[in-house]
Length: 236
Length: 390
Image (cartoon, rainbow over all chains, first blue to last red; front, side, top):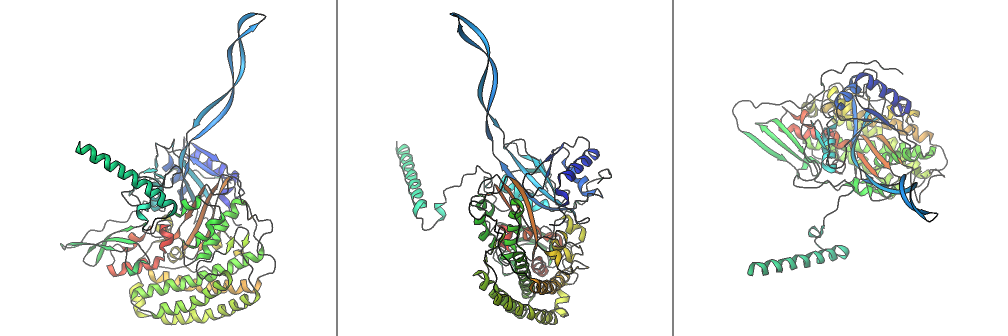
């Protein structure tokens, strides 16, 4: 393969150091990629993301002037089970006398690691023909889903960020024209999210059969029942 | 490596399309071009605001062909998405196959045998020739040259599709490449037939150019129309012949040297003005360069296996990680971004569609132009709706 210049971990570390020198408090960290592609990425914080992006684009030695690809990725909430050692007072009968003794007990604890939605930017340099540099931003959780738009820096993000907004629901603040792009405007959900549930689509299938027919019949009988109930209540 | 630290300047490159004011006191007309319009190459809509003949606003509307290809791919195995990539840009199914195979090979760290690399180059360049020829044909069709240029292009395309059919079993939905090689080997008669077809291509290019390049109507309709400035083109992520027509020397075959492109001698044609004529010219010259690559590849193709013997077909589970692989498809930079969680299905499967991203600057190119030129500007972008909407 050719120059996978931006991929090497060492180079990514150097870019991180350069960003931190130029934009104090940028909040950059390296996300290693264990696959053979070894395209390691930089995770940047929301607060100074625009400044970091401007630095990556305008620094003459980096010159990432070409934003190739913007992808949304959904990571669900994870329930993590851990075994934790806790010291606890335990009542014991020692030599016929009841005593409270402190003992180390192993306990399984469950806690939820909040998931997040991230948007991943693949940057190249047309001027210096290197790349890719992978930059990612993450939301804090899957409910509060705003992050700064990088469209002001690279216009190549315009349609792609609209797509991420449409399919993942990330609200890009500062985007000039944030509307749905692929789904229709009245659509409510974000279909690329991992917990998206497809609606019954038998209504759109002219000759429903098999599973779809079964679902349709269940649905219809449910509708009829509720209709009868409605009529009964209105008559009464 | 060290980096000079520069101060971040003000936000530049905020390349929004300018606001065009109507002239005079005439009434503005809003026209919805599409979704069913012969010039939109499928189902695509442009909401155009007109001041007389002049375009003062244009908003593209996408999504009529959306089927959430990416979600479907997340629900199946890696290999099962291969036939589906044919349906993205259905003019260039073999390029799509290659881009996807390249991304998965990066993700899983697979090698490709040499003969398979040569076959890939041959098929990708044949795809490029037929795509560029038909694009020009369609462009001329939209210009009013009913039939002749398009039929010339389709006559040549037919020969190439026959080659695809005899090799892969399908004319357009080829589903030919695999992770770590190709599905079947090419036969000696097939190579002979390909050599014959390729030997006839320069004559076709000459004939095509004799018909078109100096044509007065073509020049009058295209020169200086739909100009795209190089700095805007780079900032907006434009790729492929459109980017090169604006004078930016960026061909991924030369930059990444993916596959075995570093072994071939070819030039990258560049435009001067970034107008429709340059896009036409760049495509014609790329056909000629592709013929050169084809001749070299058909001369040098070695023997050997077409599939890496270590490649795993069943129970294919790449290690957790991610990879972005891209190629220079006929339409532009086609990339696949894959995330594996160690399972048999990709956790995330993203297509970087050149057709969609090349439309970012459609409004910029059309503003101030006549409404009749919108059709030509749109045609010169070269899109396929299967890839725009996915």
